[in-house]
Length: 507
Image 1 (cartoon, rainbow, N blue to C red):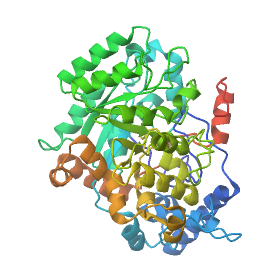
Image 2 (image 1 turned 180 degrees about the horizontal axis):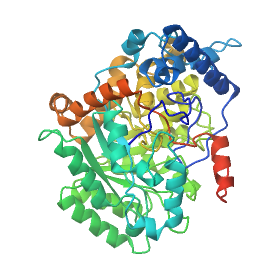
Image 3 (image 1 turned 90 degrees about the vertical axis):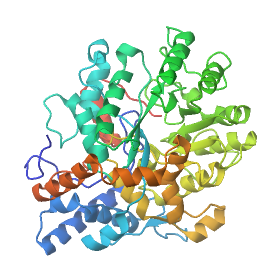
Image 4 (image 1 turned 135 degrees about the vertical axis):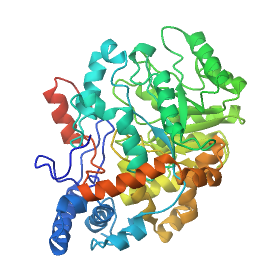
């Protein structure tokens, strides 16, 4: 169960905190002066609006109008060039009311798009990994499980299937989702494939036939000690059982800290060839975002263009779009393409991979970490739309690591790229039609889903009925809705590691 907002120990929290927010896998950049200003300003605005309207401030902050006020504070504070200063043209702003008007906020931040989140996660709190990998379990328990609004006795339960269903499907507008996994051996896996299938079965049981809400990744780890052949055999077994929608690979991961790449003839090419032979032709690769213990060099997306050119009938989804936490995104510069989205763009251009072909960019964690810097966000999205294509940018959130994805969804709806800025850099405009593509239509085409049929059936299913009932209950009971798990910012992570005897490093 969740702690109610009337609990005196519950912090007075914004729907999301301006600045980068770690998913538990990296140390985020320090929050800027503008981010801190935006946070303070949002609290001040919320306090004044709540006082004027005679409502509880916590309740207001956890409403759609609370999201609007937080986004408006980002506009006013000029985060990342979000306001004109020194003659700089802002790349984008958020089209939201700043006065807390609930009706106006709903007009801007609510919608009926088909939303297909292609990167979601949870853990199995009772799996063998808790015994086999106690240090990993403790990290998940103390860090990612640090949700102030979750009252579970064991903090691992805050990342369980129950909270996954709550955060993804009850407290957000997500329509369909892909459940993903992490790289590890079977007994060290926080969510093994059998448990993933159980989650799919439970969620799909609440949905009408042929409108299943869940799809599954199968993680392929060709550099495990058990050997490549064992992984290829498992791919075949899962494909034959029709259990897999796509393959997920973590090229920067290795049992000894040494990764691999997709164009590696000993590891990467055999995996691609097996996927191709089995007919499951989507390979989702973690690129950028070098996590703790990852091989930084192998996180580079420089291999994406190479394999996309060599295998035009395969589809390659670049998870996190190659984004690096310490790299500021600007216009594409081939002479500055060692890190970040520029590396992906250069790989595509060097190999002649055209937009809207077989390379897709995914936004999990990336959008959450750049949405507080509108100009940087405009550059990143602009480059992806231009070089990957308007039909090949996919919505993903990496939740539930950072709580419910609803604030991210609302922010993307309100995000407005400046037309003059887009023209200056040759970026396609982020129109409502393009947003609908990114939110779900692009992924629907990739995964073979009919969004019209699926949406019609899902609108009447048991999950949708639960969502409506939950919203009504939460509104009456002042339920905490979108509070992020803690800590998420740089200072909080430094404190966490210091308190728990760990080490952290700049990445």
